[in-house]
Image 1: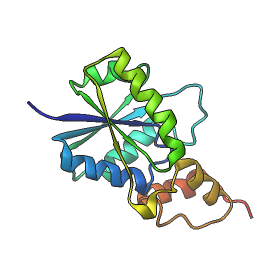
Image 2: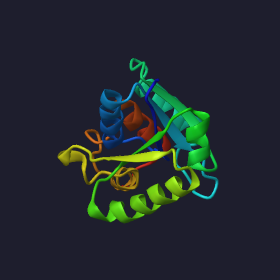
Image 3: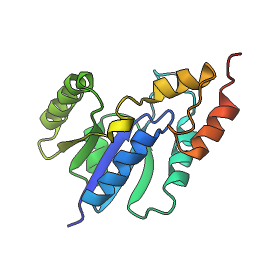
Length: 162
């Protein structure tokens, strides 16, 4: 039986921290489905199609990675993908409480779904999409924090303040 994991998130934009977790997930699982959340309540910089396209391009040479958009309950998407594992990243202690609650709720909704927590490389542990956008907008250099493709997209989409 194929070991399939789902790595959900908004990925607005994808950071090197996300890339790190996906690559390490590929060492553990036969397939990692990157599930890009379509959240109409959240104003995203990149629309879901742009995010899916960027992530597919970043992982175009990694056969274990597939990328799909989803909305609704995560456990329903996990079932649809015939997966039994959700991969979540924990950067700092404050992430734990929220992620733990979500894992317990997902288990309540579907006892067959397990959540695996991975921590990023130490040098990426502070990184978030929100922080990347803020630093970029204020004129800071985010070139080592996101894949080159994402950096180019940020420069096109988000003007920097003088």
